[in-house]
Length: 280
Image (cartoon, rainbow, N blue to C red; front, side):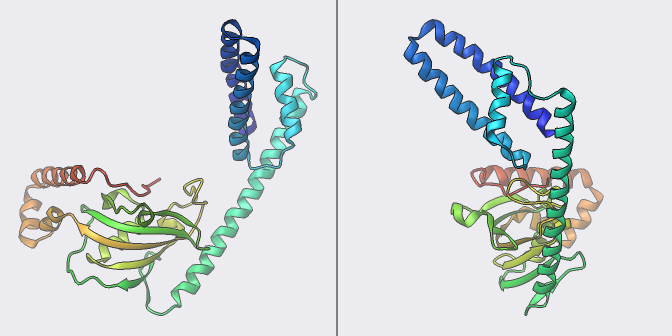
């Protein structure tokens, strides 16, 4: 349980800081020792606060501090072990109930958003539930395939417009393998032509599903992306020709080796690009 893991981390950190404090006491003056000890306390407190935020519960920080001090100075605890375990179980049950309600609300809002979006002009839907609208239709005939590598610009948002990632903000496009991304992206990219810009709405089952991608993407979240397909790996495009498909169908080992070599060589040349979120 979260509270138990948190307590273990606190106790472990206490021993770590105590060893430093002992060393400081033997080598520094009293004033420097107080300063050094205070700084450690500040850093220690910051780490505790970060872990407390993950508990997702309303806490009385004075009581947290009292429990910490009793542990540090080996004082008797104010509650029995049975009472403390009961408190942990009750808090865990409350957190799980609250999280379940939140996840259900997120899914319901996502369903409603996709239903309304599908009714908008020029919006198209695939059999999987992916929704998209063409903003710019590229004049190329080249499309990625599942083994392609691509260069794209993109921005990702939650349905309320909250951004969580953007290659535009970094002023640098992203390069990645089509097979290494979430299913909604895989499907959309293979429908796009080079030069196209699409707005894509991805249901949770084609995105990050029940787990989400903490801390920016909650569980069961519907995601909205603007995707600009800039470039497709030309070697992968060559493999898609009919004659070479027939050849490589008879020589699968050669096809596999050449595909892997082409992808690694292509990615190596563009290794400075920032990769987008991967499959979870």
